[in-house]
Length: 160
Image (tube, rainbow, N blue to C red; front, side):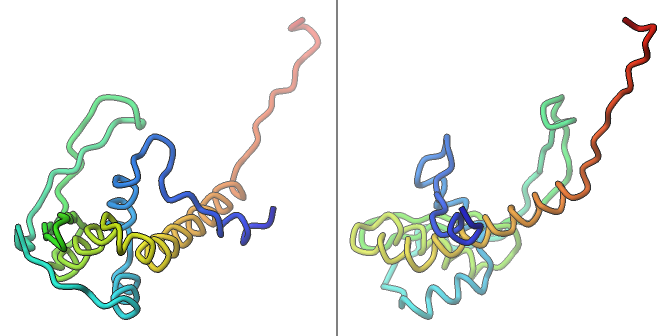
């Protein structure tokens, strides 16, 4: 299977994630230009703000070796927002302090859950973002694989 054909059928909900979790993840990882393109192609319907967009800080945590003891890695700026669009809530959490982007991200999340808008959001937003992320991941994996070093040990005769 060629790389381009494998990217065309990207699964946006990886194993172990609900569809909504996958949507929120893709919205958080979307670039500003991708959100702008979506709203250029699909005008925003009217919505109410439940929790206005606000910026703050969160403590990021990590694990030693990915599975060891947890430690505080540092702080990150985060913006969040909650809106109501046609009776459906939409939330967003994004790295950075762009409040307008947080509000538009929450609107995309609400539209993705709305039966009348879900197909358009899937086609115009989630598929392109998932495809871009899959291509970036593939390129990163190829760069890492190119630098992989194979180690081997020669066995001496007296170690038998």
